[in-house]
Structure formats: C-alpha cells, structure tokens
Image (cartoon, rainbow, N blue to C red; front, side, top):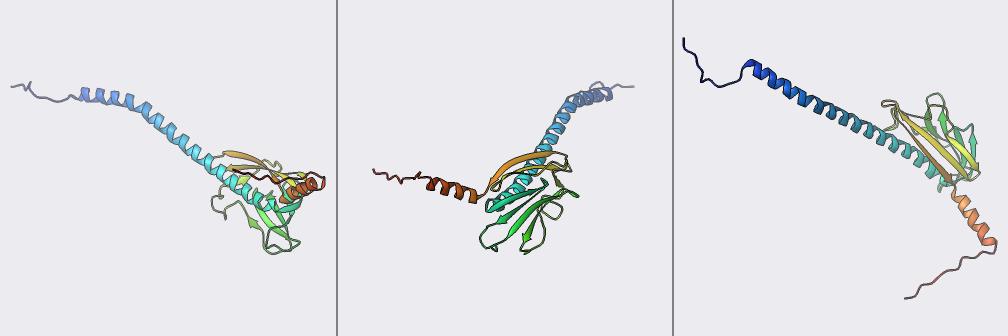
Length: 196
C-alpha cells in the first residue's frame, strides 16, 4: 500500500476548528449590526412621531393665530372666533380631542359649513398608528381670550414611543390690540432714516 504524503488539503478537524474561530469572530459583529439596525429603526420612528406632532400643532397654530375669544372646554377642546380671510363674519371653529379614540378633530361650530375633519387617525396619512394624549392629560390650557397653550403628547402605537410638544398660540388680534394700546398711551414710534 502506498501512502500519498504529498496530498495537500485540510482535514475535517482543521475545517471545523477554522469554522469555530470564524463564528467566534463573526458573532459579536452580528450582535453589533443588530443593535445598530434597532437603534436606526427607533430613531426613524421617533423622527416620524416628532414630525406628526409638529404637523398637528402647526395646523392648529395656523388657524388659531387668526382667531380671538379662545374658550377652552374641559381641557380637551378649544373654540374660537375664526377671523381668517374668506370665512363668514361669525365663524367659529373647534379643535377637540375625542376621548373615545384619542384622535384630534377640527370642526366648524357656527355657521356649520362643513363636517368634523380628523387631524389624526387611520384616514389621515402618516397618522394611522398615532394617538394623542392617551393618558387623559389636557390638550389645551387657557391663558386669556387671546392666548392658549397647546400641550400635545403623540404616541406611536407600533413602537410605543411618545413625543411631547408645548407651544403657546397668541392671536394676531392680541398683537394688534397691544400695539394700539401702546400708540394711544402717547408712546410714538419714530421713523428713522439712514443716510450714507
């Protein structure tokens, strides 16, 4: 019998040992990759929630800026005189939080020129998995007839992450009134001319 000593290759034991060493090296790298992907997904979900919260607050702020006589009802609803251009003279609008489904709605109060419009919920793009102030905290705080604080907590039901935004809405009418009061109290704003 002739032995072939000159044959080159790996034995089964060498192959198994090499694979074990490779697994020992690759396993921590796979864990790090998994953690990185999960962090990226959580960050993306948080950005989406912040975007949704800002969108809802901006919609309310934009309309409320042109309103007066804010009246907060039960902390979850605000009614105001809508002074936007093109609206009827006695138009009133309400933003309210439905306590049943924690969705935010906009509805005309008087004159009734439309129906209740959802601002969050399954029929609003990007808001299908979002609830607002699910812990029952008030959404609106009244400062006076011209200022309201919006305190919104948006929660994504998929990731269970929440974002809280607070902002104060000040009516343009309040700014005009303050300016007129300043003018009538003998304080004058002089125009300044610049020359070169």
